[in-house]
Amino acid sequence: GTQTWILQEHACAQYYGGRGANFVLVTMNAFVSSIGLWAAGRPSCAGTVASRRPVVHQVRLCAETSAADAKPAVAKPEPVKTEESLPVIPETVAQDKGILREKYGHLEGKEIKTVSQALKEFNDSFGRPVYSIYSNVVNDVIATTHLSRVCAAFRYDAIFAFGLETVFEQFFATYPSDEERDLLRKCILKSLDFKEEEIRSDAQEVRSWLALGKTEDDVLNAATTPGTCKVTNAINYAANAPFFEWYFSRMYAIGLFKILEGVGVTIDPEAIERVGQKLNISVAKLQDEYAVYMGAIEKMKAAETLFAEVAARDKRKIAERLAEKAEQMKAEAEKEEKEANEADKAGSEAEG
Image: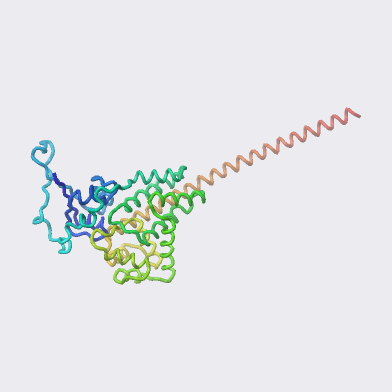
């Protein structure tokens, strides 16, 4: 029968960065399989909208099934809530109940690259094994960024680019081979269908903006006052974007955190709440992404420390083996020299 997704307030805030109403009803076709808000348009992907982060409180799938389809051993599904039984929602949202089909209906049937295809593209182009401590980071960057990329509500901006550049700088700075590190970066961006020059240029624009001595007020005021550069424009758009026209991605979050650090903000719960409320972004989402980001940094530091210790130990072993071999060669050389001297002495005595 007709399946209907009922997204409660926190689920909407989670997925749309704070733009959620109390309830928003959309049909399965309009939300997932026809529109492709998530990779491959699979209904299972839509379920991950609620399950990917713990701050999402509840997403319930209700289905109308005929009596012939009902099975005695299976509990009856919860009835679909009607408009009369739903809590009151803002008038603007009520007027836009058909917003998804109206905005994204043209994407019906469109082919969407899957995560596995993106990973395959990376592996084919990189063409060599990734060092073990970096492989999980590579897979996570490609998977999470690709899912953001194919979301119909995704909007690329300079803050997203700055976040992506920050990931490369922080997580791959100590990659053992400089040549492979550059190739790794190129192959990741290629698998995500991004232009390397554009990412570098937009990230540099954020750095240049920060170098002008910006403050927290400059960041927060951009939410209400459109600026003249890509940074303030990105902040302003995110803060005022219409329903379902902006997606809060992990790379945007990392870019925003680095901007806040760059203007002297100490990122703590109070600062996150202040920024989230001012920029109209879910505070719970910001907290969650910051925890994930810092946790990943700590794990990478621990892994790099272990990697360095193992590498140092291997170098010591190699040095010890080389020293032993040098001593052995020296001893053999002295022995040969001694034998040669003895042979010369014996020959001289025989001639005498």
